[in-house]
Length: 237
Length: 237
Image (cartoon, rainbow over all chains, first blue to last red; front, side, top):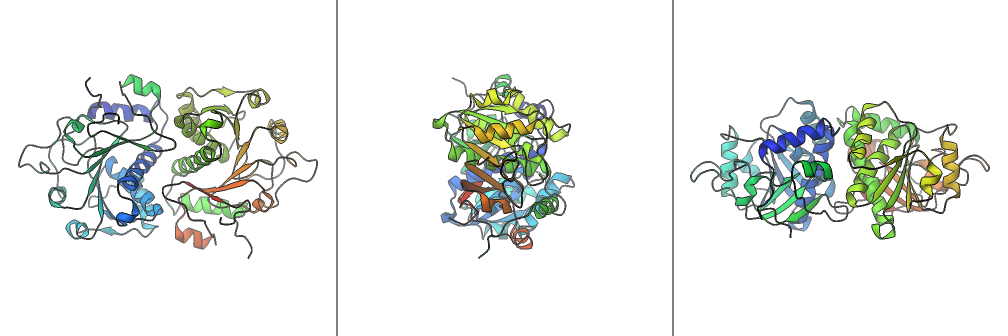
């Protein structure tokens, strides 16, 4: 049976529907998405593995999810550090950054240096709306993530991967980027066919009607969990 | 040592600060507050005790927390029913109600009838800004809650209790209302000195700086929990 995934285009339409007829605000959805990411990180990287988490934040919604996740991780007792080189003027992202500053979470400019003194990386650079080229200053960041031995959790997509087709062609930026953990928000995207690591689905706000309309076959969450672990390509475990 | 609590006035100031200099939106805070309530209900009333949860929703923020909690409970597998007699025209509350309607959560008008066919009640009628008289149509609702044997979880305050002084004088509406469970949001209010049931603190978004400024002595949350159980009057367990 073919795996059901959500294309980048369908994911954008689903998000738009949740925020129009679905009556959700982006603040709500981002809070729940970031909470899911924080719970996945807690599961794969408990505090006993080291408290330092470097969160690489991109300029769009994927970055916003990372900022929310960082705040929750701070409340869980981790020591997050934020790399956020292209700060958005969007009001929500500015507020999410302020919430971290009020928790005395440091923002750093030197990604390679930060990578050298962390226990885990959250890749919240690009999400389902990514396509085309990796823009500055992120090529060097992706290169560093390709080479590092620090474990990486990617949010929704390994940054630089094509949402439909997966890793870039051999030699291109990101072709050797293989994060150990992926958190698919709402539903897995087609790229998961090429993913080999631990895989979680998060974003526990999809109604049965939306799941039916978008032909999603979502795994069952347990108890109060905001994430559920699935197979690398999204198979139910 | 005197127990540290947050007066109604201080709670209002703290909320205002979170939403101004703290940069939180009310959508975010209400999502996290309602999530806390849902986790407390899951803990005191697991699904095995019966899936039917009647949520009594008041006209203000306390009611909004209840609407959010109901949505999460629905996702956990419960069957919530909403009693929401004074619907607000506020955009956020309207959206929270729509989110429940999209999950096919029923809204009912007859509280006593609904009380007769539920396994648990969430009292989200009045919160820390309540004072004075219980207004229509809530006197009959509070009377029904005084008499029922169905277990009740109150959000932030047993509705009708004075935030500073606790239960109303003997014979007044609510004087015999003693919910078995209370979820104090952000921090316990002074009324907890009169509370005898199971008590949780929720709302895991307070920064150390805010806790210091408002002289709060918050209990430590465990792991990824959004609630922490404390003694009836807020003592650490």
